[in-house]
Image 1 (cartoon, rainbow, N blue to C red):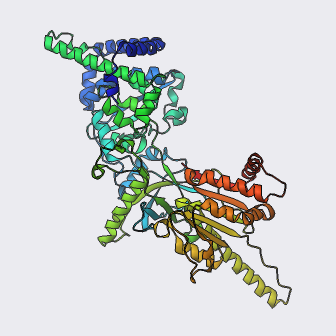
Image 2 (image 1 turned 90 degrees about the vertical axis):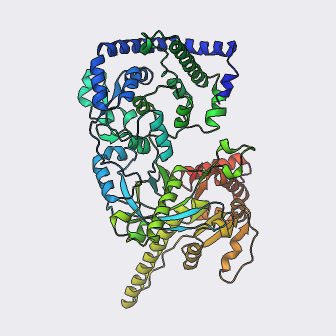
Image 3 (image 1 turned 135 degrees about the vertical axis):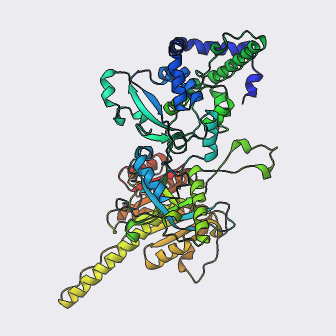
Length: 622
């Protein structure tokens, strides 16, 4: 990325940068004025600053904070309503988050001491669960590893319904955290700090403890003592790709003044200082250009295309003197990862939550080089799925070592919260409503929850009907009519039977006991097999993509929706299933609609109406 600039240090480039800087001249003047005032204050209070540096045992960090904190106030707090203040604790306290989340005692201390630290990341209250069991659902030769994870919780406040999500909090990668600590010269990160909001308006000074006064800082653990390493690991999204405006902010953290060497007349030192200043200016101009409209294409081709995250960017621009405080102000909160719950609360009374997930591999464009040796390419995985994979490996080690899993010290813990479905992706209220379930891959997860729930509902209903029959027979009265149970069609698409036909045995059992009325399976990378005696419904197995299977059964689907009040549910990867299912339904509408709808536009309008009235529900992801 930097080689571009080395080859483009010409008049045209500098002229362009000058124009960019002219647009921000007033802001830059304000920044310089604030810096000069701040430097004067630092000189007048030099003794006090030295004492503070010694007491805090954090001299390097405090120096940079004194020099540059006002910059972020100008750029990020233009309304001058509030700012952040950081206090440093003299004595370290080890009562903090255990990095592997394997000791319940440590976790209980963490929850009681750092409630804001973790709960601020969730819409609901943070809960702790532990791994009770797991299964590998994918075949040995499958290119992707798919897991079934059983999480146990004894929290009485845990409740969910089919269609809800579990949000998992996975820590940032340790390598990334350590790189950022080193880049900011923060040592091992065990220094504890307290973050406070300082209001510029004196009328607000009494509200310092009210976190809701500034939503921008709600994700920070305000007014609590926390370790810096825990902020980087759990609170801040240090792996995010910085947007252009953030590069503009970084460009303001370059100090070309040579105040510390004013009394040094050594020519060699002066030459070195001049070289440093030139290097500082060179980096600053690069950031300004990348953050400009003219540099947008280069920004996309370098930062975005190569997925250069915050830490990597700071390591490339080593002379940027950004401080911890400005990291806290400008970096967004760490995100949880949502997964559809694949279990039913009727199975275990809310005490067990099942997750179905695939170990996600991320395409890294830095590795897409023909000169790379395949043996040296490092695979990149999704943060949360890779962390859960590692937690499963730890659990596996405990089992293999024959440890007693009832011992608190030998449990593998995961922090989570429950999130309600935000698009009403839930089962209908009545069992008499027909449902058509369409899924690919791990999109089967919420439908497994649906089917387990439906199974228990049907069993309860059958028991009630049986009791009513017995009562009516004893009283020699007319027998009540049977309750109508709506049909359930499941269309499931996968690649190969021996790769990713997950929960195949369960699905067969659901079909046999009537939970599923008809089961349709498509294999996109496998030829259709002959029907076996084991399952007479295997005529619904087919090769090809799932949309063809749906169109082949379009009349049945359309009849269930229009004439029987059925509901269609679709879940899976948007790129693989979202648009193709829409197109298939449009073709079905045109073919079987009695109102002579022939055009795609008319069919799309009817499909949109199905979405509005709740006949067509989707849960798809990118």
